[in-house]
Length: 122
Length: 122
Length: 122
Length: 122
Image (cartoon, rainbow over all chains, first blue to last red; front, side, top):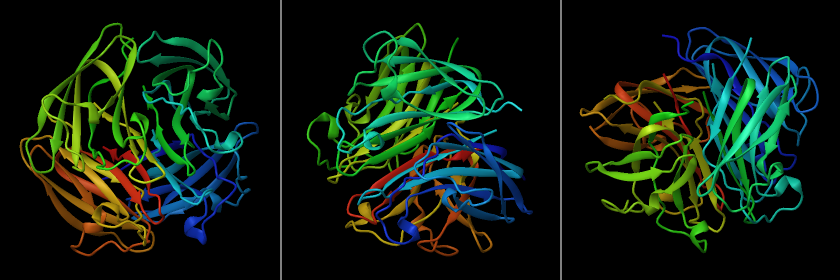
């Protein structure tokens, strides 16, 4: 049984410039939580859209069979890192059906804020 | 490949009257993050619905080809600004398919709160 | 053009027992933001489900034509108020298509927390 | 009338290791709020997916007829508890249609953060 969709969109993207927490856990970050329930790896191409310049990508990630991968946008490096403090949006295209959920932890202040939504799949 | 829907709804709307942060980044705001993956600009008409008066609009925004636009409701001016501290809802009608995500940053207090959801598209 | 669905579900419900804020704006609350874009009033019946007793309802609300109504669950009184500090869920059945978004403001502590999602419509 | 879906996915999962609150209400937790509107119990099998080991499950829960069950992932014990501070994802398969919403309360810090989304149903 195949579960999910092959195209996912997250229109909201913004990695805060500052963090007050210590360690990787408390750094301000945006995450795309990807679940691959298939018996084969899912190969995913990500394109980042901006407000005032051409899209950048594809970034490539592979989620192993029957694994979840909580991808931090902060960790994307190739072809280039996403600049901090900048509006962006993302499109995920996978060769196998997956499901994606978007989360942001904002630690610009002493007390963290959280938000989440299932991405828009089609 | 066309990605998205032409009609999007955000039933929740409320721009807090106060902010404690400094600078545009920390002003309490509601945002509609719009992604246009098409090769042509998307022309969008927004109507604002209220609890106790007739709808106001259309407000018009254009999202360039292959760009994202993080629209702050606070910035809508024509035909009239949205009053602060007032319940509202919004309907987006686009001439091309887009995807919209709703976010609020509430900085009425020292520590900000965040919330987000993909809007309802049809 | 009719926009929306006639059945909406919000599985998560919990009105915190405490609030630290002052005034209606800062009382801990759960809200169902309803948008009726039709040219006629939408009559909605709400049923509240609990973990350990039979469902209660219907509660009845009417959203006027082309208006939004940000219903606080705290305000439901007839047939009975929803107890604080208690898990519940809600089902909305409308005679006209509407769109519903769920929001909670939690002010049990000095700094508020927020969360939101579009309800599940069918 | 049957309302809901039989398969639900929550790609995001992470139970924070620390809590600052007192009592069950303020312990950091992830919740799956399940609503069963049917006239019969819904039997649900949950599988937990990880980043770097094989899926674990099924965990079994039953939601009585016309009841809601706000399941804390922290409470899952059999076949094994979910480790704290670890990325995971979850798949729910029910024998009757249900609706599921995901919520996290993070009390690692003095002021709690909240997030929620309707899970992805199919």
